[in-house]
Image (cartoon, rainbow, N blue to C red; front, side, top):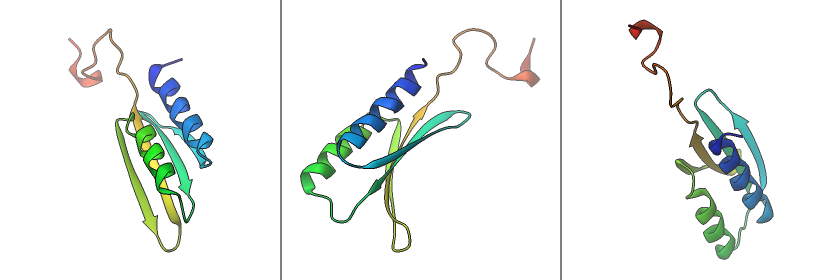
Length: 92
């Protein structure tokens, strides 16, 4: 299992353990985790959730009056260590 997928699964599991509903999606270059944040959320749980997502490459919070609050995290997928990674138009 790629390290980014294992890390994403760990983040999702830890957020779930805090009582948040999570979903994980695989994209071409990253794996994302989203967690619905209920109102109200105790300050201690917020601190723990932020500690969890701090292990990601990027994280943030989306908040709107229509959709509530969603905490998200993204982990970049690793680039292959071998071969020409410059792309098809740059082959020798």
